Amino acid sequence: MDEKEVKIKAKVENIVSSITIDRHIDLEKFASTVTGIENPSRFPGVIFRVREPKLAMLIFRTGKVICSGARSKKDIAAAVQKLIEKLKEGKIRLKAKPIVEIQNIVASASLGFKVNLDTLATECWNTEYEPEQFPGLVFRLEEPKTVMLIFRSGKIIITGAKTPGNANTAAEKTREMVKSYNAIIE
Image 1 (cartoon, one colour):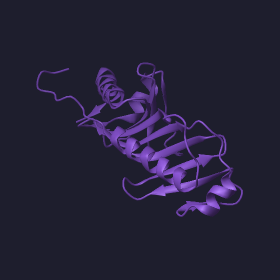
Image 2 (cartoon, one colour):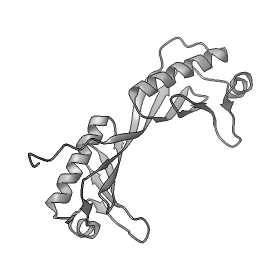
Image 3 (cartoon, helix red, strand yellow):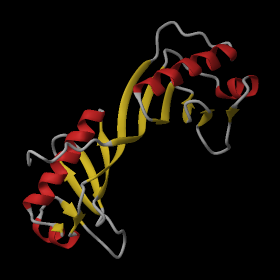
């Protein structure tokens, strides 16, 4: 990395986490007694939308909950508190603290230059590029295990990160890879 070059700071757009509670839930009873719970037909769970922070939780009868829309661990912690309150409203008491695991972080970043996607597609082995189907090139990293969508504009979308630090590392490695293949458009 050039001495003048600034490290890339990826912006977290969405954190998907799984929350496990210690009991099964009677979804029909829960949805009928608690306000703010959606029970769509043909879906094996119920939906709990939170306004602040803005996110959604899919609650399943097994006690598994998928939370998406968070942008930080603080958002996830707030979501867990609101979930516990909703469960209490539905007369569901927990014996233990819910277990939270981050499953996927989606982030965005800018490389700071335009990218020749054709060069990368032909030179770099771990890429996929079908411009007739989608305008971005797919680049896979083994460490950290992530997938980047790289656009000609130099914007990238990072998926699969488990921490914001992983997203930053993936962005840096992507920039270095693009430079190593001389795929910068001046």
